[in-house]
Image 1: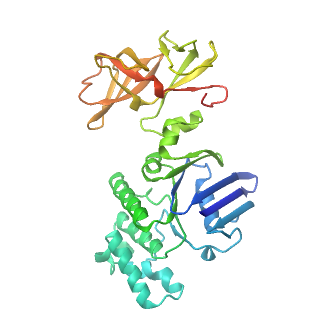
Image 2: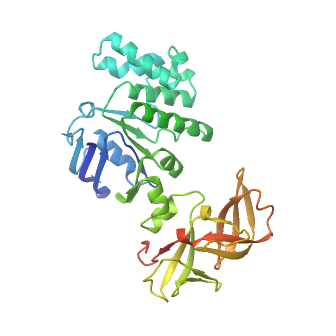
Image 3: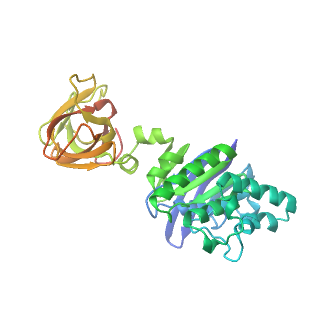
Length: 357
C-alpha cells in the first residue's frame, strides 16, 4: 500500500515552472529522501505535499485519500521545519504537546505521548526549559518530538539539520534513522546533502530542474547511475570523469593509455565518450592483478588525509583524478606507485546526451 501517491504534479510560480509533472509512489513505512541541488524543486514538492503550497496541476493522495485541495491540518501529516518553528513563550513540554492540545486530545493522552517522545529523543530533562535556553541540537529534538507525538500517516522533514554543525548533524542523522526504525512510519525527508541522502534513505528521489532524474535505493544510484548528473552528484569524493575514445576492447585516454572494458560488447570503436571511475574503486596495486582490473603507473600529486583513508590526487588520461586509498599505502606527494582500477565498475557516458551507455 502507498501512503503517498503523486500523479502528474506541477507547480508554477508565475512563469517559473518549479515542479514539472512528478509521479511518485511511496510505500507504507518507507524512508524516502528528496535530494538535489538548490533550486531543483525538492522543498517546493514537499510543501505541496504538506498543503503549504497549492498544486497547479496533478493529484496528491495520502493514505488512499485524495488531499490535493485539502487543508494541511486535514492531511494527517506531521512536519519538521528547517528553522525549528518552536513557540518561544512555551516551554519544551508545551511545545511538544501543542498540536495534541489544539486537536482536543485528553490531557492523560497528551501526558503519555509527550513522555514517550521525550524518552525516545532524550529530552526528558529539558521539558521545563524554554527554546531560548536550548542549543540548536536540542531545539531540533524538540521540533521532532512535536511531530512524532502526532502519530500521523506521513512525516515530512524539510532540511531539518542544515542549521547544525557537522558533529550535531551526524548525531541527529543517527537519531532520525533510529526513530524511523522504532516508529515504522512513512517519512519524506528533503536535503541538499548527498551524505544525508545516502545514509538515511531506503529510497532516494534525485531531482533536477523540477523533474525526477533518477529514483532508487542508495546503492542503485551509486553503482548504476543513468546520467552523468546522477553519477557526479552522489558519492564523496565525487566520481572521476575522463575524456576517452572507445576502442574495440575498451577505451583510449588522452595520454594514450588504453584500458580494457570487460563485458561491454557492442560499443562503437572511435566514439568519443566520458569514462567514469569512482575513487572508491581505485586502490594501490598488489602483486597480482585480478581479472577485469587495470594496473596503471602514476605519480601522486596531492594527499588529503581523512583519518584511516586519504584522498590522493594523480594525473591520468590527460586530467587529474582522485583515488580513495588506505592511509598506510600513500605517504607523501611525489611518490611513484601503481594503482589498481576495478574496470568492472567503470561507467561510459555519451558526452552528447550525458546518458550512461
